[in-house]
Length: 420
Image 1 (tube, rainbow, N blue to C red):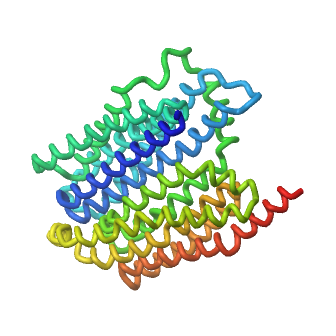
Image 2: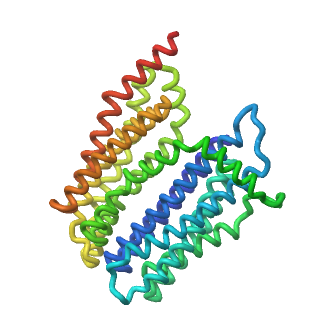
Image 3: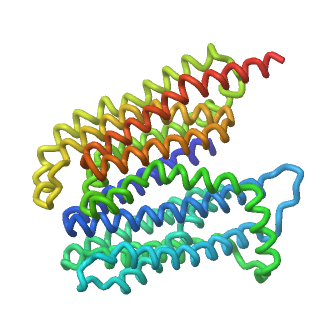
């Protein structure tokens, strides 16, 4: 029952945040220009990278140090981990300020670049604080509080952004002020992560930082590469085709956001089964599991696509009015990508179950190289639809190597190990 409540809480949390991101994107598409929306996407994605890095370095380390059998738990581990997260948040804010100032270098002189960079830096700090608090709440099995943190954030974000839109005051800077305010409120106005504890000591923080790095050092390159595979094409587009192209690519991708959510939900439900089957080495048990998983992954696509096709004639005029002119072609390509995504996601999940982390990292690097070369060529000489085609080719290469080379190898090795 406890595991079921945790899974339902996590699923509801993801649905809430996904719906919020979708709503914000649609509101910004209607309320600001394409170039401004493209800038927002780039800045938002850097924030996503920052929170992912903090989670990889400190979230994984906290989980490991807090649960290792036969090893003494460091005193004030939760409090000191959070302080280290805030230190990284401060460094991230400085980098965010510089990046925001750089990315707006070619913008009209009337844009308040310094004020925008300051608002974005403040947003990054509170974003990392809220996200790491949420991660630690889940790791300490306080999922109801974690859900409350995100509920406060989502409710206040919607209220502030709709208010800005109503007052015709919506722009990149005010968006990050609103999201930063909502993050700060969700961080500070919800139950505290830790109660009163002894004062922090610099030596203990330094010791914890070294222990965390020993645990999570390989997680950092993996996180950066994974983020790059999902998002680097948007930055290449911004550099070679302008922020408006970034906006159009991201806006069209919104069409498949609900399908991505179903993959994550499936993984949460099936994670334990994957590990058990993979480590068991029973190929006869793996085959029906893979077939069932594929059916569960493709069922939402079969149900969702006709609904979206019926809705699109209502959505398209709103997009065309805002200058999004290639949406039908781009959305069709994203749906092709969505058809390939379950194959890749299931293969990756199986390899994680086999604990094939090093081959997965090497494969991710190869996929990133294939994708980057294709996207660069398409952005410079072909056009936006061909950029998405390059992403599809990179995913197909990665999925093929997973299923025709790596998974058969690990099935054979695991079966041999179990037989011994």
